[in-house]
Length: 272
Image (cartoon, rainbow, N blue to C red; front, side, top):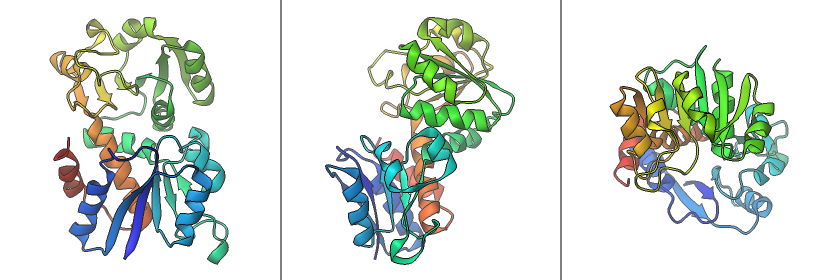
């Protein structure tokens, strides 16, 4: 049996196990997805490799620390975080000395979420609210897809730090949201604002029908931001799509097989 898993602390709330195991069932794979709550990321990765674990997802608080224990791909290095570890030996070393490879599928998850909703990003003006880990992954993805990125954050210094790293990006405070969103084609909420009932990070009057709006929050699925964006005629993308497609990308890295996206989506949404 092949074993895959999730490293984080805490991870008891994770929806990854049922999502991934639905894929194993659909394709008839003899595999299991388990969760681990280690105290440190380095010994956890080394222990997983020694036990023959095939692949790991990595979540809070270990995404940044994982970088120094894997051979990270170029995107993960630029983002500064790893959320997927592959033990297949595809790095520069081989055999028992093979260094696990590290990837960041948060960026790919966001890209596929937009693609699933037929939203083109090339040449578009995008606003990312937030400057944390998810915001970094999404901002880099948007830039690589050809969008101009405006990062808006409560702490402007953090927005400036992110904008310095991302090509074609600029930094703004939250007080600029009304102006920059009204001129944008794409809007992403990459903060936790929206988990609270009746709260949105973006002024309602800034939303318009030429926007595609993605909210990284997936509980609730319909946040106040998405509800108001839908009322304004915008295309809306709930947070479960990014969660789904980052898992799809990890599954495909580990197995080399096309993921059963519809089955994984159904398993995920049954638990939301």
